[in-house]
Amino acid sequence: MAIPTGGLPGTLLVRLIVPLWVLAGAMVKLITFNPALLPEPILDLVRQSAGLLGVENLNWWLGVSLRFFVAVEIVAAIVMIAVPRLARFTASFLLTVFLAVLMATMAMSARRDGISAIWSGSCGCFGSASPPPIGMFAMDLALLLGVIFLRPRRSGSEGWRLGVVAIAVVAGVGIAFGRPQPVITIQVDDADLAGSDPTTEEVGVETAAEPPGWGDIPTEVEPFYAPEFAGWVGRPLSADPLARLISRPLPPGIDTGRCHVVFHRADCEHCHRLLEDHFSGPLDVPVLAVEVPDTDPGSALPMPCEDCLLHALPEGPTYVFATPVLLTVEDGVVVAVCENADDEALVVATIQARRAE
Image (cartoon, rainbow, N blue to C red; front, side):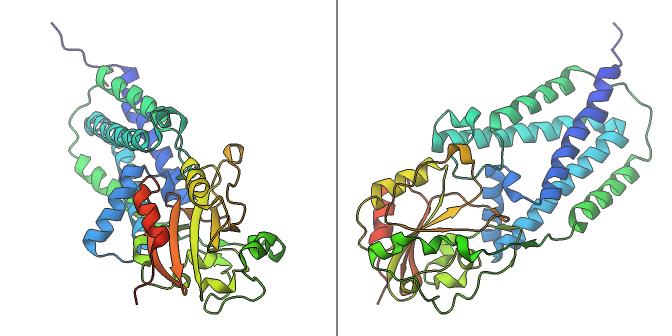
């Protein structure tokens, strides 16, 4: 029996359709420079690698990692287009990796938000940047099955393919790392400051004067913020660039008394539950509810904390962290952090935490 030599559909798939699909994803990441488009397991891997390598500036490391992944995808796309003998292997390998990452993403989403998160997206904890993982999984699976069952046409010897791979690597790295770091300019409108909300008076906190040490909100900000909240413990709240983006005016007692800070998203069910369970009644100490703006307005939930001081982070940057995040602050210093609102004991311990004498 003669061995089939492949046909035009398989050739178009591995040398045009798949590389264009991969290249489109790489360009979206590079143009938007948005790490939130990376799957959750990849973001966790980047954070863990920063800890292992002793990288203190997570924002910088996340930017470098984003460029690296973009470079890999560009190199793979060029190889699939220009090196026929490597096209099918590269396509099948890359799509298999994509599917494995998406399976891990769906498992993490289902464990955190229930099985419906696989096809409906997350609860809003990570914002609205990424599509539901099941859609991407179905697309990549269809492409992989096509690569497996549709054989491309065979080609002759390619003694120059190592040179093409080298050129692809240079091109991919050059494009990914040659993109200038974007700078975002924001406008601060004093009339829209959430801290001017009259509910601030209900918990005995004045908002007339700006606390010292905070300075003005910067008008030029980073394209994204990926804070390591655990590293905030023992440091002044005002020392972190993300915290300095909180809308003004801030209550003067934020540096002299005791308060809680809750970073939340309006469409985040976990955030709503935390605020409703622990801060919906009369408040013993001030609570700053700081809204992260990258949400779906149509899925916004009502604010359950009537006495909270309503603040917000500015629109423009990408906020690469899950919400809610609960902080306890005493005399301006962060004394405890909770990033897992499902751990009731940890939430209570964070609320009750006191600054060591």
